[in-house]
Amino acid sequence: MLAGKALMNVFRSPHYTDDIALQMDIIGVGSLPIAVLTGFFSGAVMALQMSRALSDYGQVGKTGTLVSLTLVRELGPVLTALMVAGRNSSGMASELGSMKVTEQIDAMRALGTDPIQKLVTPRLIATCTMLPLLTIIADFVGIFGGWVISYLFLHIDSRQYWSTAWRALEWNDVAQGLMKPFVFAFAIALIGCFYGLRTTGGTQGVGRATTQAMVTASILIFILTLIIAKIFVSQVAS
Amino acid sequence: MPGNNQQPVLRFDRVTVTFGDVEALSGVSFEAFEGESRVILGAAGSGKTVLLKTALGLVKPDSGEVYAFGENLAALSERQLFDIRSKIGVLFQEGALFDSLNVGENVAYPLLNQKSIHCAPQQVLPRVEEALEFVELGGTLEKFPSELSGGMRRRAAIARAVVTEPPLVLYDSPTAGLDPITAHTIIALLIKERDVKLTTTLLVTQRYQDGNLIANFRYNSKQGRLEPAGSGAGRAMRTTFMVLREGRLIFEGGQDELEQSKDSYISKFVKQRV
Image (cartoon, rainbow over all chains, first blue to last red; front, top):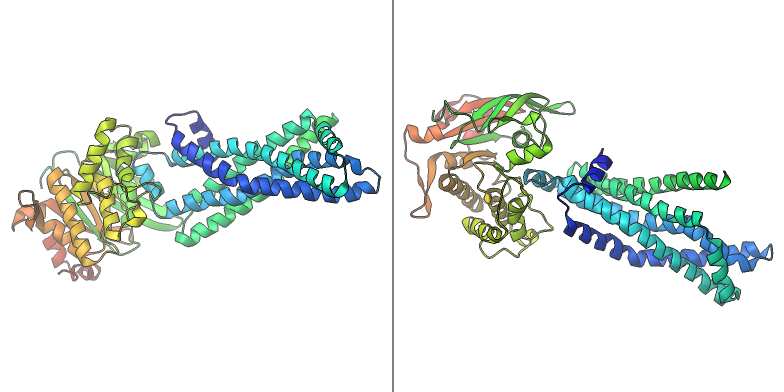
């Protein structure tokens, strides 16, 4: 219901461009440090762990392949989405929830604006544009993190690392890696706004809405990533 | 009664609203005419706020009909409701100012966002200033709601409610949680708004003295202060009291009738008279 209305409003005036820009700043720029950090460390730790497994087969040189594959396909999108869910889904739920319990949502309707148009749609648009961008950045930083480890501790040649990392990626991986954040963005924004808008019961309710939004968004991300991965993997098989 | 043969501004016809299995309003009927003041008394949880929200179409009645300006709200889409709502000013409990906007932007909000109100961009600021001046809050344009005191917030919210000069204004517990002096100035503002702009007023309150002021005082625009409205039939006609108890309308009538009522619930309210 909310999803439908929010989507319909994407194509309907009035557009609150100021709100979209503001949300993009909050979600995109605000989440950048955390996305970069998670990306770097997951890339680094993947390189370390994988090199141990690979050394059993004498294939430490393939570290770049594994790091870039796991990051672009799975870890980059999922970890970034989880971070953004923790930061922004809960943030939306608490902001909209506070507005709900102080009657600001009602005031908005009484003063001639549709809260879905004014609040939900800008957040949806902003998340859908910013999350894929954040994921791309996280992927790159992650591969860079893998390189740091490979170069310093595993003594893999830089050129070998980057070329294996680059060659590992196929169109399918990249498509999957960009499709996921886009879908996750819907889950994050809509879940956050949904729990926010149905908040009842004062400040306690706001706390409850915040937790529920974050938990539900995170679980949904895991379920969705499985579904998308399944679709892409069976596509390759066929 | 004045305007008995004209169309009511607001009409409730056997309106029932339920939340879950609790009846917040049950079978409430009344009519409010142009220029009339209605004071709705009731304890917490008696359905006062729900009544106002139903009048705005924010809450949909489970049965019965609400007519505002002759239109049945149930028959209107959310977009059409915006046109009706632009003719109704509303002060929510605690004000409900937008935290993210400063006072000037808050007051400008209805001017900029209500489609049926055509306000030229260069007219917005003067009108906002005028509305803030009206509530004696000039010079707070740049302040954020969190920087204001409770009474100032309430006044800014009144400015936002009346900036579009709506013919009908609803006030939800405008004096709740305020000290008696601030409460008095708020009610004085309501009387000023009513008598200067000639609006129909619906006031929901827990305090009988608010209603008493509304019924017995009028604003003298020459001297800029309140004065007794004078005795006799003139005042009782303009103000009607309603008492809500657990969603039911148990009293409707003038102040004298209210004070003579033997009902223990009603006399509990009236005893507060100062």
